[in-house]
Length: 429
Ligand SMILES: Cc1cc2nc3c(=O)[nH]c(=O)nc-3n(C[C@H](O)[C@H](O)[C@H](O)COP(=O)(O)O)c2cc1C
Image (cartoon, rainbow, N blue to C red; front, side, top):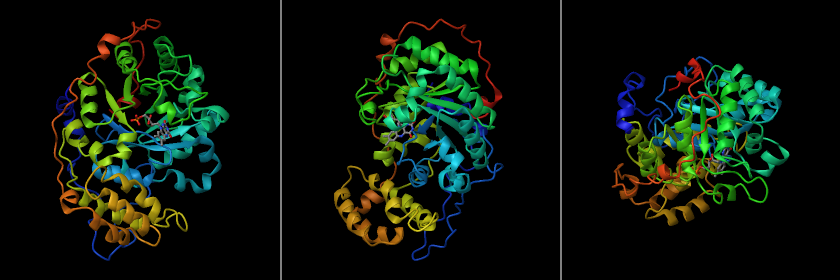
């Protein structure tokens, strides 16, 4: 279904003024501590689930990358993309309950936002979810896809959980019982030699049968738990988009998000035209945020974007950044951490190399983001800073056309259509 058509089904969900930005514009030399209007979101009543446009497009959870700073930048570019936190391990939440803000607080403007948790202890997953529920996340997601040795090996969770669908069903039940928002699973299409389409379906089937989970994010490559690094596990096992599309065919009552290998908005649009319910992008949204995210509101959600140029984004981000410096103690966050997500904003543009060199030296002494931008930004031409959002012609219309011919045989184990669709799930869609 075309994105515009989807949008036409959802007029009542549109915010009154979807284009309005939430940050005040910066004023030279003035950085009042709370002028940005961003405060950690704690109150359970602050934003009810179901208020946002559906998660047609989301930015993937990425450890050390999708922190509050990156998510603020992403939100300034796209008002409607769903944002995922980095994975937070359940035990961290349980053992750090006196300093939870450090791990769980986020500016209210980051809604819609999903908390991803990791773990393999039912009690801790339940307790962690309960503790997190005061922060008003819009969905809780369980990581069943991380192949890192620390997580899947020593930690015995992440992708390793795909070996035990029954446990994942119990874990999702425990998570759902401790929150009042939808729950979801992010997984691979298989692990090691458990990589047949039948096994993937059995995993989904078991989790759906044992819990209220009706949303799976499918990273369309398997994970190899021995011998490949996490980075290799995101490159080497081949992408099998046909498994994702076969799941849509075989579990019509379940929502599936397609993830893995998408690098442009044209590919995202092509996947939706091919029938994808929802799409998640990771590395491309981090490494090239302007190109990946600037068309999301208009192209995927069919609404006017509130973002006009990178100059405007930087002005708004600077107000946010300077107000949170030192929020969690000396240097937490510091200017370097705040600049980190900005370093990809001018990917492949004139002046990018010079800007990065200037950034390198400015980071040695700048104490505020305003000072940093003042010292470095003259490296970027005005024509780039003020370039409006424009749309190039798509060359990737047929990107998913081949999947039909590769589809695996139908999954037949369980009667299709026998799952209930709980109200919890429809609330967010
Ligand atoms: C630096 C980095 C950290 C990641 N951390 C997580 C994580 O915490 N939880 C998770 O489920 N996936 C994590 N991933 C995987 C991504 O969410 C995503 O599934 C993967 O990158 C494939 O999507 P892409 O091809 O669009 O990047 C991480 C990926 C990267 C590059």
